[in-house]
Image (cartoon, rainbow over the protein chains, first blue to last red):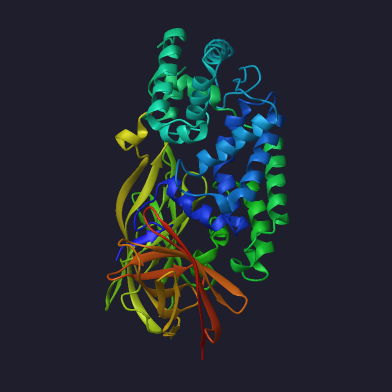
Length: 191
Length: 348
């Protein structure tokens, strides 16, 4: 007989599937929810940072998202895009409730790039490149910008993004392709 | 962007534009902001009164777990005590650590050290607490896991119906719990000489999903072959088998409980479904109550002729006393059949 249900059979398990096990336990177990929080807090924060005017506001939205998720945990079902997409959807709704209906990517001056290091000249060039890219992202149609943010801030797949923004896989993939084509056309990268 | 920066992004993102996009969004919250956020969520969890929390943690453990959780937030990374993470694994998975016996056998292959920290077995389950550490801390690695294990003794291989859970500690270490169905049920108590092989471990790279990840079957996990091999003796805990032979019927559908194997780790419930039930596999959603303990069905398997075997998210030490099995609904592929089917019986 094959095992069915929330738990997987032998082998290494992708992150999302372990999430499903934790999500099941998190209905009644705060420690399990704590692990989900620890695993996804940065992705949720990074996404909400694009929808908040400051780091503190983004942290507040992140806290609200996880608090709402905790209350809603018994209603979570594994169908759809997985727990991270579900958390981001809750976060998105929280930001909409807070009056921030569209995403605006934070400017480079506001946020450090964790990968950035080097000489001042290099950093200045880097900053210009980032400013140019941010400006191009912010010119995208709202839904395309949203898809780009979810993909590169939260690292979601097209299917997961579709769950957050209420689009089919194919529609999301088209959105991403169009957005990337626009960015590629308008943001010139020196190789 | 420098070549080094691009390499950090991972094999899927040599595209300069996508590398730049990752850089734009790679914002890191300030340490004080992150600390306040962690404290707030930690406090929320401490204050939380989950509807069925009493089912999950044994009395006195909850406070410890939450405190540890708060500490884990602050530790975050490979600097914390690796084995302390076992304490975060609850429900059916905590048994190997809290009840298990110390094994502490390690083996290193190609710089990956796998340790059997503890092991536990009772009438329904065999479980292993396994930690893995990448001693070389290879660049590009974001997570490791050691969840695959085969266990054999003179009676055969324990490979059927197995599963595992893993908690990473930074990029280069993780604790894992793997559990197995014994070759015979109930598994008789007494000493067993076990041979454990971890045939491979999982290593996750730092790539991120491509646009068409679902189509191309993108998977950042790769296997690193071992094996890591261990031999040790383990004494199997006991268990109680109950054959209540009770049934309940709702709308022409009959649920019959034929056998329970009650053990400290997990309860195995064998049901028979028949009557006016459409063809197909039906999963029961429900719980088992014994005294003030309530356990839920979490893992099931289907047999022939409407036989369903389900495992619970916890066990009990002493099976004596009244039991109630409640099936709220039966879930098929497209249909849900609403009960409840309630079955009461008493074990001597």
